Length: 291
Image (cartoon, rainbow, N blue to C red; front, side, top):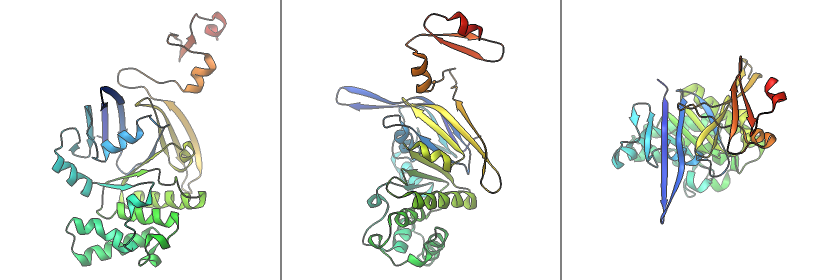
């Protein structure tokens, strides 16, 4: 069984007298220790999915399991315990990650203090994590004395403080330059590899696909495409394949560029050929069908 299982996941928000469907029967599986990215435009449902996986929101219907936790049927108290012990968060905005009046070490110690970890243990753990993210020499620095990239690496250490099995990063490189972004991704890759933590990066930046081995694209509340990349032992890309996701109901979302190029409307013609399926707009074109 996968570490994360989403099956026919639905989330509906009520705004005044309107109902907004944020997730529309989403299916997704993620393996333990995997580092992957959820990519999509604003309104695609990726942030809603992240909030559900992080225990910050509850789905309306469907099934969602993280490890042994059934997130649909957890009580409020169980959600709080789940967020404290099982999930780490890294947000785009520094103010959501770090307290400005605490040093880097004190920020990393804080989640452990809230969980009742003894002071000596949390002090050693904080220093170990800050060393891991390359900031062992910045223990006593407050956020305003750190660069944007350094602040995000401290935030990653904060997210890892209570040894979570899942790390959720929401646009972690949205406010830093490309060099700092690469350091942030390398830090998360190393932690995923060394501690077996599952890392999910949520972003609208399709360029992030070059930094992870699996990218799941979202559109209209469902997963739509998936990119898988194979690398050698030196991290060089050997192959990159893009797939359209077929859900349990047999539905798939064609890439928008294909729809626009073919001029597909509400109806399309399909035909089962010898080794593939042909799709045509409107009335069949004999020349295309023969091809």
